[in-house]
Length: 128
Image (cartoon, rainbow, N blue to C red; front, side, top):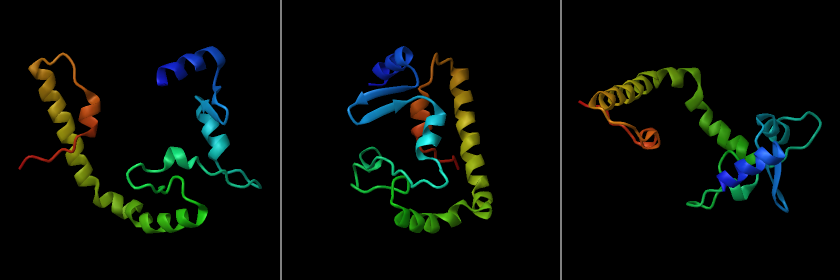
């Protein structure tokens, strides 16, 4: 599907109809125009089919209605405060340094390529 969409966008531009009730956008401004804050206009809800978790069958903060979104945002806000982020800096630096260190080791071994998807999705456990 992504390859077909890429070809369609190359041929027809930033907006392509891919189904009777679905459009594909390649312009970042499109996201803001559709889902961004628009003074005096009502909120457009995100497509629940796209954002609903297959595992839980529930939506997330991304597609919740305004009331549920507010509750979830309040529950999570402390985790994104400046203090909470500073408290996590050591952990983040440790994993980032470990990530770079292991990539350097692989490059010295002479491996011709590294599957970055695997590396970004793996949970690293710092060595003792």
